[in-house]
Image (cartoon, rainbow, N blue to C red; front, side, top):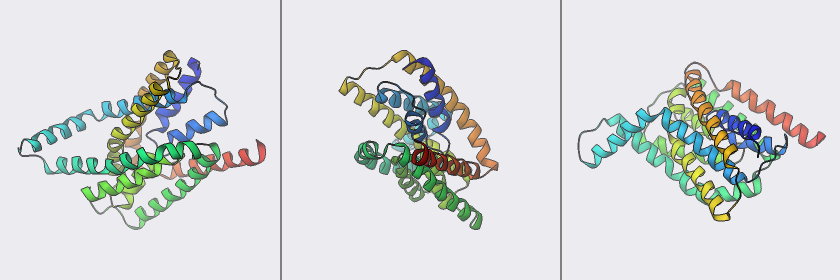
Length: 270
C-alpha cells in the first residue's frame, strides 16, 4: 500500500466513522468500485479503527474522566452525581449486546456480506430507517431522559452496524431518537458508546493480523492513522454542532443517491 492510498483510506475512515453513513461500507465501496489495491486489510482496518477510537477518547476525555471518577466513588461507597451514574450504567449495559453479538456474528457478516452490492442495498434500507426516525421525531418530539433501559435498547440498535453499509452512528442516533431522546443527546451517547466497541474491533483486527502473520506496510498505515485521527476529531466536533440545529435529512439523501448510483453501476455498467 502506498502513502496516497493510506491517506485516502484514512480520510474515508475519519470522515465516515462518526457520521450516519457507514465508514466500513465506504471502505468496501472504495476497495471494489474505485479499485484501490492494498495489502492486508486486517492491518488497515485495525489501525484505522484504533485511530478513530483514540480520537473519540481524546475529544470526550473530560466526560470519560468524570465517569471513571463516578465509578471509583461508587465502588468506594461515596456520594456520586446521579446523572453521571445513570450515564455510566447506560453505557455499560448498552455495550453488552454489541460485544456479545459482535463477537459471534461479525466474522459471518464480514465473510458473506462484505461486498459492494450488499453495502448499496443496506445503505438504502438504512436511509428509510432514518426517515422513519425523523418522522417519529417530528410527530412525537423528545419527551424523556436517558435511562439504563434506554441505554440497553440503543445498544441493541448498535447491532445493526454489524451489517456492512449500516452506520453504527446512524443506528444508535436514530434509535435514541425513537426512544425519546433529542438528536444531540442521542449523538453524544452514540459517540461515547462507540468507544469500547471501536477500540475492541481495532484491537481484534490487529490480533488477527498477528495470528495470521500477515504483511503490513507500517509507514503508510501510521500516516493513514494520523490522518484518520485528526479528521475524526474535526468531524466529531462539527457533527455535534450540526445535529443541535439540523436533522438527518442531508445524510438520508446522500445514502439514497449513493446507493442508487452504486446499484446502477454494479447492475448495468460493471
